[in-house]
Figure 1 (tube, rainbow, N blue to C red):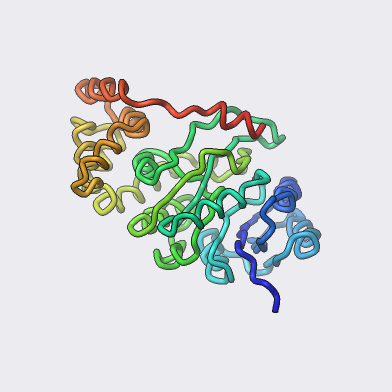
Figure 2 (cartoon, rainbow, N blue to C red):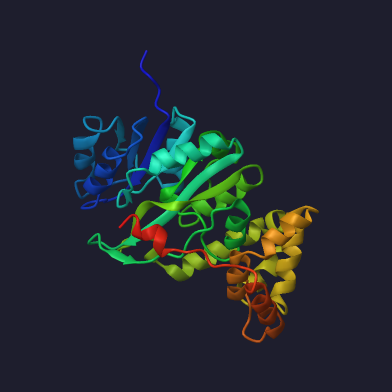
Length: 320
């Protein structure tokens, strides 16, 4: 009987050339080899399918699906449904996995049965593969991840390893890009914990065709809508109050954020203090505070005395 691999790597593509060979080569270089690839083409016209078939299954175990283009969220949902493994790793056809990515992520998730998502730090590169600059360190703890998600991304989608069970229990991918991942995270967060490794796992490529670079105003609007819809259950915050906070229109932002931290702490003073005396509480609180909200700014300055900013260069230089 053929052994079932531990991880399924799902890669949706649409015109992924000329980056696809480097992406697939980074899978071939993984120190953890117990995986298979499902690469799903959504209508490429640039030779991506032909290139993928030079690699899969000859050099990388798995399959290439073509001839059935789907919207991104439907494509991802289909790949998750058809995966034969409990662990599913996301990747895009223009990114580069660092060699120990799967080894470090599978080790972390196996140690914690409550963990539904494991991500990691990323290195931004351009279309030429050159380093674009340091990314701010993503929070590693679950509570800090949710704190940061009030304002900005805290999980890099193509750098994640999921439990398939957790995705399906949460209802799988449902909403179209660019918020197909964010909506899923919030639905998963009601039962599962999240973690980002403190080491880089992926080189994330930014180029003119990147989703994150296309129609940024519409993207921001959709993000606010999604977070707002989950704010009552996740943060104990009415949707309209979250929208005002997100638009820096709250009369006293810190009061609203402290009330949210108290709700999330569920009566635990220790967890409450860990939430509010966190770099991510202070940093994102500042970003959600209006220019005339002087009281909130004063409180953040006091909190700043007790928090330390995570170091970035030490982490990133190891991977350069």
